[in-house]
Length: 416
Image (cartoon, rainbow, N blue to C red; front, top):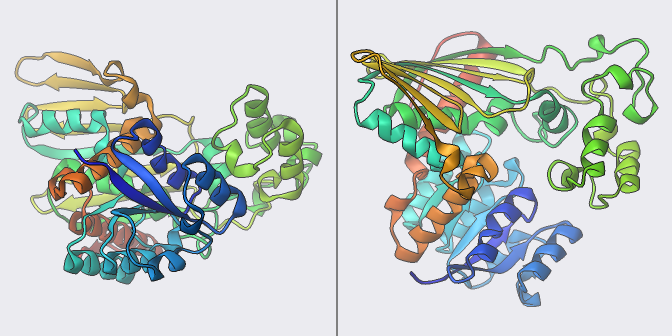
């Protein structure tokens, strides 16, 4: 298989994760360009991958103006900045890996889909859950007919109390006007995953949820505005002091500490908590996205699925129950438990024993996605991409419809 050349537009956490594939497999992929407005992240990626100075930019638009100089582009800009680069690079003939969500509104998603199909470029969206060994094993069991036809699914996204506080109360995805609604930013790949497992079109959705806890009226009377100067902090589970400083003291300097500051020393983190957004009291932020939501789905042949996304859990893998006509399955991302009605036989399949990739981010899905994308581009084979434009558009439409249902308090039909 030939080596491919890749540009990264957006060199933050997600862009860096995908780019790291080129370090592990230099014979298969090379990072040859970067566009990133923040000096630290742009310079860091340029140095790590020995990118030529003439291929280092602060704005992706400058790359799009140039003649095509790579095979593919990874677009990992902020959520609201996905549409324009996706369309521009598709028109230039670049194959595209676009971080999820595809875009933050239905019209933009449809425009992206139309453009990539018309330009005949390979296109993958970062629905990494499809690419895990766990998902592929689970899908194989279902497609084999072992549990018969799927009747219903229960799927839980346990966001985790501290993850909610980090990303959706204090962090980049806390405010809908700055990013988008939480079902899209956090869980569109869960909705997509359910669609993939069922293997059929969804026709109707309903949804309920709200921002219930992380509000000013729930602030303890003795609490301050910053965790470093707060009498309530020792008994607060959402303490920024506890969340971040404990990680630094144990040498865990990657995400989420890497998002708080580039100076990942104790002193550097304390300074960032005092001066930046991540030290704020969770009851005094400008967050407006939900902290819990449920989605109900009905598919074309009567199958049903329920999805629960909630902040109020231990941070742990997703959990799923699948109920079929001949058996049922419980899975948690690492293990699959199958029960057959006819024989009464139970089997537990441990996916965690299948190698180091399954232990990487998103259960190995990050690796699975970029590996599939690189292979697809190298071989010009779209069948290697599990999250292409049309089905990705469909699951995004499910997500938009669910949010419409939540806001308008009515059942919504999916219009493809």
